[in-house]
Length: 483
Image (tube, rainbow, N blue to C red):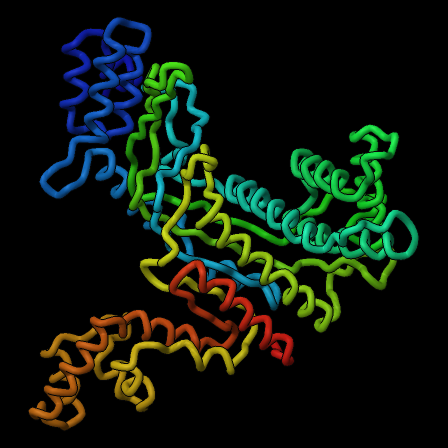
């Protein structure tokens, strides 16, 4: 069998060659896009781009484009290989009091990003997974976006702490620094060392708030003094040592894969005439596309608050719980702000990258510790709760795989037990089926998760509800919840 390089075998620089590429059913949508790139340095460039746009914009009888169909197939392949996993699998090998947040979201505004593929049919491709060519958000991108949102949140928080007038010296100023640096160090614990851009933004803002304009001291020197003070705080409290200056951070992220791809046109306007000048085509993930966000909080170490400059790998449990209680509100508040207010990806200042507050299915906040008083409060669909409380009744309707039985299967279950499928049993089956279809399937999954021996699972139906659920968890931990 003769094997040839793809561009040599299927490419070409004529109108007929481009048409042959588009009509070749053995090629997927993104391979066609790669082959169309050969026309970029030729007069056929715009024709090739028109072919590319047809793969994304032309909708078939099922309401889907060729590119979206290809993404669906690749997502199925990706999941069949186990490359998109639940946070429960990760929590199984993590230490107690590790925490996971997972929810599926729907884009309210398109998501824009920049791929690192230098050879593409248009100038602004959305970022895609390298092998499966599925639009996605990389873990490092999530961390950067959430870190930026956390920096904004920190500035808002510190602004509320700074008194008016600001003390110029003495114990009052020292106490103010202690309060400010403790909140700032909390972000270091979550995200690791501050990036230079975040560091400069915080120091410059603080310098303007804390120092009098009458001081004969350049702004850069004021910011530098603040950074030296904060570095000293980190060393004194065990966040940093002389030997090891880096810190990993407790937050870890999963990639997010999207199920659609689209195009967005941005048309810059001439400031004098107020008309468009040169429309720019962007590949995007369109409004209505779905993705899944997953985050892990792993308390793998604890700053040595009473150990000088040493950090404790196995901290005192009460101190660790207090740390989690302080971190939970910050994490969930920042997540809500990122998704519903700030947005993620490119051009967020124009509103891109925000999501709908209401979730299509309940999100999960999972703590690797058993807190029974919370597990009992996870049911919400009245139609199926009676079947959960009566021993053996639910298993009559649900298969071991978690599917609702057909009416024929239910009658066979009764016959095997020596019972008849009476009119009363038929009414019971219809009632159970109605409860299942009106939300009972989700309730059953919640019930099964709540019964697990080593996790506490709380559910939230909107991003607005997430901080409230986290607050409930923090309150139970404060009352002495044990692992």
